[in-house]
Structure formats: structure tokens, C-alpha cells
Length: 426
Image 1 (cartoon, rainbow, N blue to C red):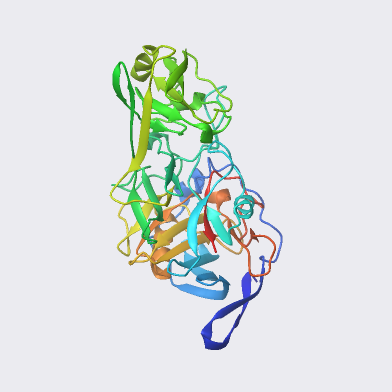
Image 2 (spheres, rainbow, N blue to C red; image 1 turned 180 degrees about the vertical axis):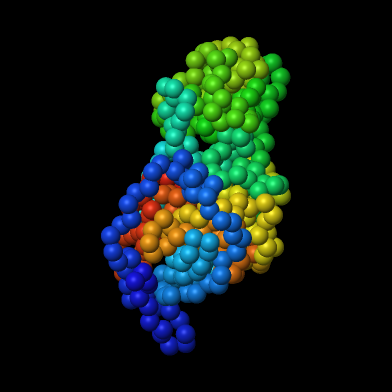
């Protein structure tokens, strides 16, 4: 039986006595599910359609730290019984915060447990969809996430064009720019963040169209910083804004700017570590034409921020599935699978992290539409879908335990290295 073993202390508080992983052998790893899309095309084509779970029953609970409670649950969807883990984080609790789990570089992957332990989180889940597979010959997958990232109030990356993202189809009115996170007000929010940036030189002002992202819009210029890592930037000029698999552009340029001065101009898009204090500008098509006009020694000013109606101290990409307590119209209702989601209460004071197991005899998984209804039953008013399938992972560290460990049953049989995650710190 998968559970958190817990005891009810005086006053009704929950005290952890320990946690156990589900009994039985790990499930057989499935065939590749396409960039952690969380669903198989055959399952999607054949499965009946469902839009809501039939109830939610908590099977155990444990307090990981003041204000952080982990629960296991059972529910029923179109795929039958589904089990999972839910973390309820009270953002009003002193010394509790929710933040970004990340590897040492944006273009890199790591398991949720490794990220959580490296950053001393008490719990965490996997995050955004990412560039795990590549159809462009000779182009290295970057491992980078599709959506924005904000860490400690600092913009790390922006969103790729909608046609370049991975994962299930977006509901109407949503985009790769959507995020969930926490603002300076210590409240959780679901909102949208767009890149606002410029490249200013003697030639005038260019609009910046990308920041540390694996796809730059056609005709645009993107900026890469030391946070990107060592992976080649070639993927940024492949595909189009509508078709991820379209050919790579051959009309490209790359300019290195160190401390406001151009140090190199090239037609080739490169790779390798970017030194601190250096920004590499990558242009394609019309963007490449503009960059080629720069000369070594030119002074260039690169500025950028992630703008929106909501300010964030922490944010991670994920597409909305729940708004005002109601699932969005147009959610994919086919293909039960392992799922990961995050949500916030109506007042923004509670942050919910949910992982649903799937593709096993003990848990059939949920559809995206069912996942939205699950978040609502758990107490969320707004919520997002995150990467699923073999990427779905929930890790936690109870009081007195030396490290966070995996508490769900990943459908690959073990944790998958992912682009980022959401961590809880206390």
C-alpha cells in the first residue's frame, strides 16, 4: 500500500513517522512518449473521453514541516482507479517558500530528487515540458524548458513560440508564455509573462525576441547568457513559429557582446560556455541581417525583462487548466496518463503540487481535463498542467530524514532527468 505513515498529535496536528514507497515491482518502462508529452498517440486515439474525476479520497497525511502537508490520495477517472500525491503549502507559514528547482544550467537536465537535494528543498515535483528529442539531423537536443523561468525575481529565460513547444495541445486563450509562481506578496498566481527587451547600437534599436530559449522566432534575435550552459545554440534557429519540425534556417548570424562591446561577429551559430559578463546574440533571417551590420568594437546595450500584469519572485512555465475554480473549455479529455499539476487557492495563500501515477495496474492515470477537476477538488482556484508521462515525479524529505526521495512510482520505472521543477523550502 502506498502511503505516508502518520500519527495525529494533540490538537489535530499531523506528525511524520515515516514514508514508504508503493509495494511491488516497478512498472515496465513504456515506449517513448515524445518529449515527456504525458500521453501516447495510440492511447489518445482509442480512449473514451472524460472531463472529471469521480471523487477524491485522502489515504494518508504527514507534516513535512510547519505549513507543509503531504497527502496520498485515490480517485477514479476514465482509466479506472488513479493514485497520487498532493502537497499543500501554506505560504503564510514563516520560513516557508516555493521556488524553482533547476540544474546548474538552463540547457541541462537533472532528476527532481537531485535538484531538490542540491538546493535543500523539503519536497518537489517536476516542472515544464522540455526539448528532450530532436528531429533535426545533427542538432543536439538542449534539454531546455519551453516556458519562462524566474528565480529569485530574476528572469532566466523566456518562452519559445507556441508552435515550438512540447506537450498536449494548448486550450484556447493560453500560450507557452503562461506560468505559475509566487509574487513578492507571498501569494501564488497564474499569469502570463512576455519578453520585453531591446538591443541598442549605433544602427538603432532591435527588438529582442528570445532569452535563453531553444527556439527564436523567425526573423528574430535572441540573447544567450552564461546561465544557458555549454550546449550548442544551433537549435535556436530550427523550426518555425508554427512548425517545430520545419528545417533549420541557413541564414544566421551570431554576435558576442562583452561588457557592452562587440567582440566577435560570425555567420555560424556556436556552442560552449558563455563567460560571465558576455551576452551572445543569435539572429535568424531578418534578425541575422541586422546582426551582420554590427562591427567588432561597436558599443551595444542589451536589456530585457519578463513583463506581465503580475510580478513574480518565482515562476515556471505551465499551461492553465483551471481558472476561478472551473476547468477551462477545450481541455484534452482523452488519453489517461501520469500527470503533474500545480495550483493556487483563491486567495493565493495555499500552493498545491499534485502528481498522479499512471500506466500501471494500480493506477491508470488521468486525462488533462480530469486533472483540472482534481485540482479543484483539492482546493485550487487556478492551476496549470505540467510535464507528465515518464517525467512525473514527487520527492519529499520528512523531519530527520537525510535526503528527499521519490515517493510516487515513475512510469519509466525510475526518475527521468527533467528541465526544471517546483521546490518547497522550509
